Image (cartoon, rainbow, N blue to C red; front, side, top):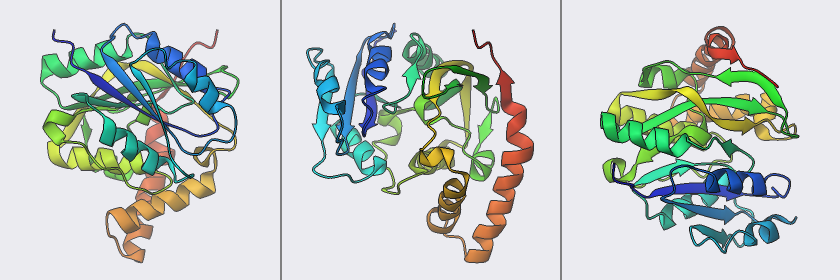
Length: 258
């Protein structure tokens, strides 16, 4: 199999506790033809100095924004610099398992698929396993994705030769969901790798951990991205909540924590 270049998109912001492990998980990949484009969004801690320790590896790039502009802006900057056929995403506090890229690229090439993702596991801020694997439908449709984001951002990869470089919303949250929706609208269905290939870190003070904030951002997806009326967006939120509470829990499986 030809080793196509994979561009890894990594925004960073005050990630001094995690960024070293994140970068090391990329360096540990069995698939080695990658570039990691880190765009720092105005960190005020030691994030920059830690990243600089890795820059002797010329596959790793660091670019700094002049001011804190949000994850969407940082990701778009990284995408604009990407040279790879495949675009992959990894935030500065998450981790990849060693065979992540190899398995996904082989899957995409062998099945001629321009997009795929995988299951993933969860850890807490201290790296302790939370004992669950987040799965997804074996064939994901646009309609299913409309009601909830089934694609873990740290697992998604798309073929830039097929889609071009996809611009990400500058919204502070849910940019990845909107991007996957654009992809599924074009290809109709997508298949995940049926195993956990990445590790998502649950942060206590993140927007993702705030249920109220998540509801607000989800509402904005229906209102602004899908151009729904206020009543239409509220109706969609009812469908989202039904999916969140009654369908998605069936796809959360227990994993070993030792």
